[in-house]
Length: 88
Length: 140
Image 1 (cartoon, rainbow over the protein chains, first blue to last red):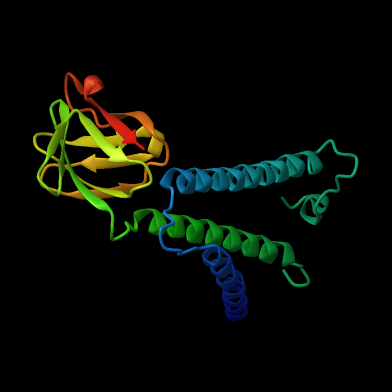
Image 2 (image 1 turned 30 degrees about the horizontal axis):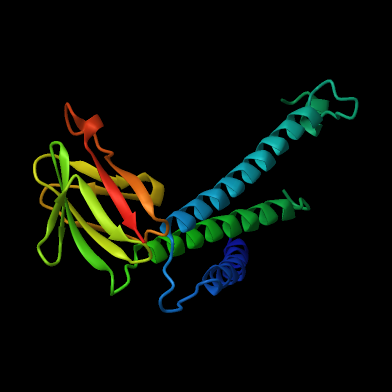
């Protein structure tokens, strides 16, 4: 448990810090240059939609593969050790 | 389960954390940028009431049902309402702010194209809500 927590913390730090750096690096603060809120908001929307659809595709793809791969009628299907012993 | 490899789970957790961190940071940053009004922005008091909009500038001049602004200049709207809740919306510039009785909510924008744009109430406010419009004139 402690090891898992430590690993999780390290992962978080390794991932969160570079992410923040990437996000804030693109900021420009030149005087007289105004931010166009419609551009910022629509860009954010498109980025979030891209992430949402990609995650959706990966998750549903994984589930579909899982159901297909571990179906009973799959020629590669092997009974678990519990099923072999008839314990389940 | 001894001898069971769980590295896919850790990769999965890592990817999820990375995505959540990115999404959260990006959204927070955009919100911060969008909400930070420039100091030189001209303040316009916007008041919604059944069923029209009133705009008052810092020098006291008022416009009802129409608003004239200059292209490329920043404007900060101080939005409020007199009777029931309304919502101030300039669709083409993605400006949307609740107009709440007893509160002043702010939103700012810079018009970048000359022309006429519709200002519309976006909170159902009674019988003539659908017609609670004003016109934004962006001048060169």
